[in-house]
Image (tube, rainbow, N blue to C red; front, side, top):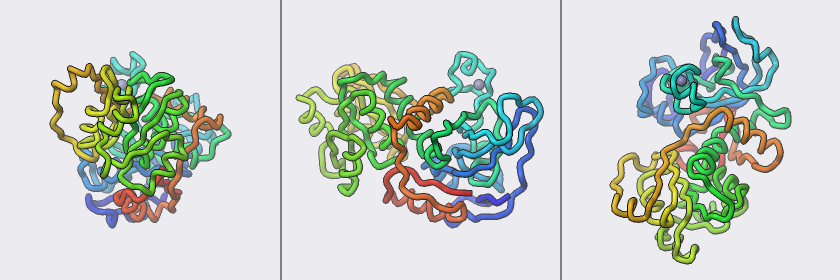
Length: 342
Ligand SMILES: [Zn+2]
C-alpha cells in the first residue's frame, strides 16, 4: 500500500509517500480502506518526536480517518466488508477498570492510533473491532473526519465535563482551530452566548459566521477585562481552551465566580504559573479533558448528519502532499480542518 512513511523525526520534509506492507487482520481485527485522513496538531508533535511516546521507525502516523471495512479477522461479528466506519483514536483495551466503568476514554491500557500503532496516513489501517464507530449514511467520509475529533472533543469538554447550560456565557479560545470552530457551534447549539478569541482579525468574520456573538483579539484585547465588560462584570460561566500558556491564564482571569474551565490542549505553553488564590477564591473548577468516548463520536456524527452541526474544512490534499499540509498547520494560516486523501 501507499503510505506516508516516517523514517526519522524532523520537519515536514520528513513526510514522504512510499510503499509500505499491507496490514493483515488478526483475531478481532479489521482492515479499513482509508478514504479520508484528518490532520491533527498532535501529528506535528509525532513528526517532530515531541509527543512524549517514542516511535520505532519506519512509522506511519495519523490518529483519525474514515473508510470502508475491507476485510475482517477471525472473531469479528459486528462488522463486514463494505461497512462505513471510522476508528476512535483511543485504542481502549475494553477490560481495564476504567473501560469496565464505561470510561474507555481514560482506559488504563490504551494505545493511540498513529502513535503507538501505525495510523491513517496510508491506504489501509488495522484496528480492533471494539475501536470502531459507524458513519451515518448521510455523511461523506470528508465530513465524518472533519467532524468527529473536533466536535467530540468540544462536546466532552463543554457538555460532559463543564456541564454547559442554556443561557450561560462561554469563552472559546482559538476560534479558527478545528476544536475551537467546533466549540463555537456546540455552545450555540446548547443555547449559550459565545465570546470567541483569535489572534487574527481576518478570522473575526468566520467566527461570527459559525455563531460567535462576540469576537476578541487576544493580541490587542485584555481578555479578562473585555469579557468582564461584555458580561456585566461577572465573567464567563465556562471557558474552553486548547492553547494553554497565556490563553489559559486569560481563562482564569475571565471566568466568573464559580465558573468552569475545560482545558483540552497546551501547544501554546505546557508549563505555566497559576495563582491558586484566584483559583480557590473564585471557586473555579478546572477540568482536564480532551479524549471523548465512542458514544460521543456517535452522538456528534448524528448531529452533523441531522444538519445541527457543520464541519469546517479548510482544505483537502492528496496524501502525497502531507508535508505541505503540515507546514500550513504550523503556520496557523487556516480556519477549520485539513484533510488528506490516501
Ligand atoms: Zn481499558
